[in-house]
Image (cartoon, rainbow, N blue to C red; front, side, top):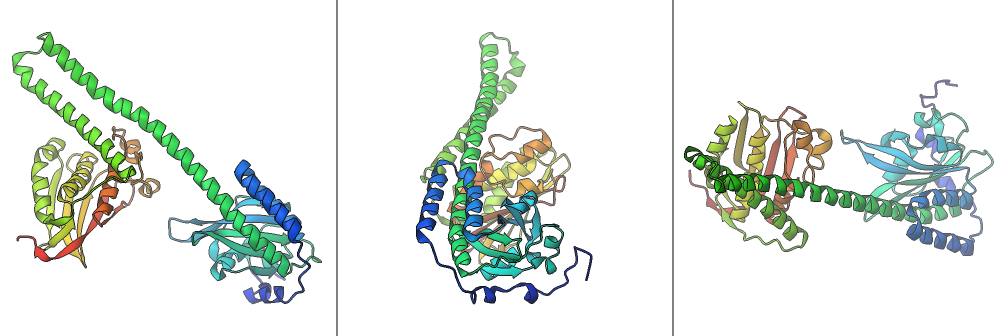
Length: 432
């Protein structure tokens, strides 16, 4: 016998006995009791969704005469692999709530892969992570998967620590029914968390809007007051008017962003799709940004891999999209840095890539940077970044044009790449 709890000593076939499960005689169903229990769960779902999972696990133990029960959820790792987390546990194994196991080293993972109830006997003989749990030993484990809208979420399981307890087909039927409530409970919890996050984001937005509006207005009022009092020398008038103009234009841009977001949220966004010469548009945009790039001491260049066919897009909106991406790249690239805009054909799409040598993006922010009110770069640089809705609008505009956009960064200090693709117009070529 192997004394190392981290080493499996039996094959999967030795511990997986699902075929035997459905060959066992099933006890008599008590639909009346089951129906009453399910009705209580439905009421609890409405009254106290936070308590639903734990009550469901208690019901699973009682209905299946099990010793422990639990819910395991799928979590996606950054490396593309899945782990399974014990998010709720009832019974002697409850001290292990929160633990994670690689999906490919778990009986729950096998259940998910086969998408059907699975029964294991003394599974710790094959799964090292279960062997490491210590007593009480798991004699039998019955696992069922659950999902929502076609997406697998996790598993619901019951365990018998008593050697004399054997699960039967009736236990599998009951557990499968309860798994549906697991999905509903988790869905309600997720929606509530999302709603709370949205409310908090709106609160932050109101504070941010107040700041973004108040500060420039104070600047304008200050200049107006000085001009009224004649406190600006004649040789400084041009600079004063320029400062007031820039302030007013920044406010106009801010209000335009808010209006765009309102249109998007209300489903009122309209685009005029036409053939667009993306190469010519990019050249024009870069020329208009020369003063800004010189002021920031950032080199901006374009790499046009002609011939490039026209894209199908809204030209005005595409200019807005690219302006946002390039301005962000310049803004968050230090002096002597570089911003490169590449235009090329990729299969049946026109691709525009904006790559910079700037501050980069943290991995945890990269996944949410297109969501509204996100300001991850602001936390890195300490600079003001506006409302955090610019990239949300960019994504919505790109998708309205039938395109896609994605972001990539190798981390803080390693630059950022934004790549958008648009449908191609097959019969028109950009001029060389």
